[in-house]
Length: 421
Image (cartoon, rainbow, N blue to C red):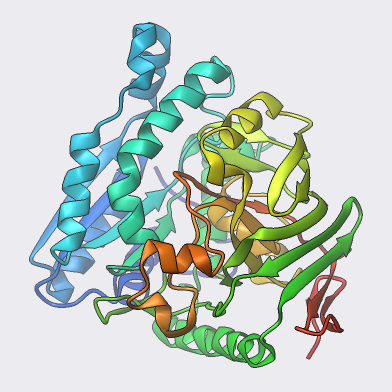
């Protein structure tokens, strides 16, 4: 397909921009080291980017690149024809193998580009069972990723189903081209020196984390339409954002793009109510208009305008699914928010708004990176544990954020969705 029209301002051919995105993924996202193996997961429709990343990885010195592809048609075939008991099955052997690779030093890269509504017409009970089985099987790999045991990153590629969702009124080729333009712009690959652009951006994010870590807030208070939420922060929490050092000593950017600074909430100190400000696209189901109430850290009431049945089943995944594992701050004027697009993709939409995440906490978000802390140590500091980690957006230009000191004094952090400098 010819990708015409670089609406975001680049005159470079599509193939050249794709190569630059691959370079950013390998050098900035992963910080890949010579001799390191790389494991890639990707939708089948994203083969061109997967191949470009593979080429960039080998040029950087990767010893071996192994790619696992998912296929939407095969997924739908399962829901159409598999026996009922099949939805409690997952490829544990595959995820165990991935975990073994990460323990032995392999880097991990995921390419996102899934159809946001792939499973919208499927039986929610089967979707929930399949997701739960996968989540259980994925635990060995998820724990290593959540703990930053190895360097990892996520990037995106434009696919036709996703492009049709974002640009429903455009012809297919125009929709795909526009989505690629948005991806390239948000990933900072259209300038003269993308790597230098990322260095400057990481520096700005680092300044934000340093300021928040200086204050050592006990909690954050979010106030806006449908939202009055106090999020207590974990004991010895640390704010992170942009480039960070994995436990193998490699500096990586876990998300390309990223606009957030984030930390670990206290699993038992979240109270109030909150309304989502953007839809959540989860495993092929679009969940819109989420409203929940927290008491002592746990969601005690939940609803959604669409996808409520799927949300309910997600919350029943395990005990930790009703508690928070992450809170993140993003200005309403971020580059992704400024695009004016709703991406129906969490990687992008979470970087357009402040957000919270249900489920597993990042042990990295503690002083000294959580080094040496056992699961009991982390739990004692308030870190949540769960089979899931699902981000959804609660920030906007109408939401204010205050930091609450240990004495309960409110310090303005954001007003109208923007940083207070």
